[in-house]
Length: 425
Image (cartoon, rainbow, N blue to C red; front, side):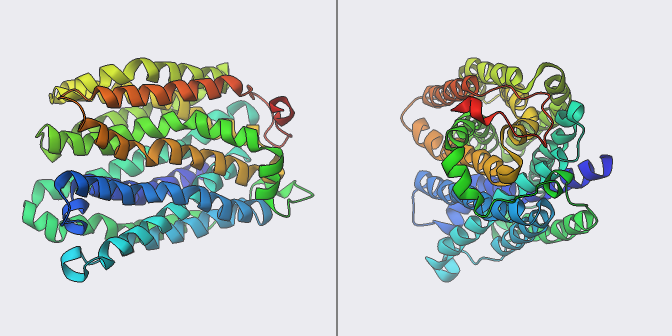
């Protein structure tokens, strides 16, 4: 289990590095380079629009790779998704800007972002299921929390590279070529990830299935559609919180408040570091007290904290901004630390890879794709304190709270057993 958990963690960290480095670049530099004819606000909105395309692609990736995972095994998903995401990320770093090739530049950016999302849509399901189906039932929450630490590490790595470049390069150098370096580095990381995953064994949960689904998506749509919608709605708040903090607030702080890029990145990274460190702790609580209670508690905390968070952000003071981000990240991880155990336990084994991945990534469309765009637009309608953003995030938290309330508890059901889907009908 330690070797498997380490490989899953490393893989998700690399995949999410690829995904997050684009979000950081969209907040800081892609608007002027790829949409120079737009106003600063419109350029930022357009850059966030290409950012959102990755989320739209993620459910499609979960269908594609979920089919492979349910038909051929979890292990091939890990290799294919990593190759696709890594290649697309390296290519983003090589796209000429608008000044060089005109409208072809943002079109290429859009296509490559779509491919990034397609690969990431398969990554989460493969990594989590391979770990969940190997793990003992009484510690499944703990072991599956390690892939959930991967996004935090990927974010810290992506933003650490950008922070180092920002601190050592001039604005002109960063705009000319420095922003490309984090994308090119993805090639080295992808090669490392493939090496780590080359010796992983197929999950016993998959090998024990006697009758594999012929068309997993059709079965999910027919028999589990309500569960998919509920899990997507339940997870929306996590995505909304994370990308409000890590992507929208970065653009808001640098463009609206005049805070330096280095200060904003440092505040955000410090909060994400604490969030990553607390992930196994929250997962252990999930093993002891159940998945659903922690999810309900995290949603309630998010609903209560969104207005204080935007007030603290609007001060522009580093310590206060960090405290605002930290409260949001703690609410977020209270839910998402146990999700990697919760979702596989909700779906039956023959369609688990497709069902869990589609539900997880649809939540990203609802919460992650729209949040930076909506929040940026809402800021323009208000004063210094973005009350509209606080109201928007609180509304999503309440939606997710209602969805979690309708989901059943699963702990400590053995993951190989048929999940409690009949209770949903």
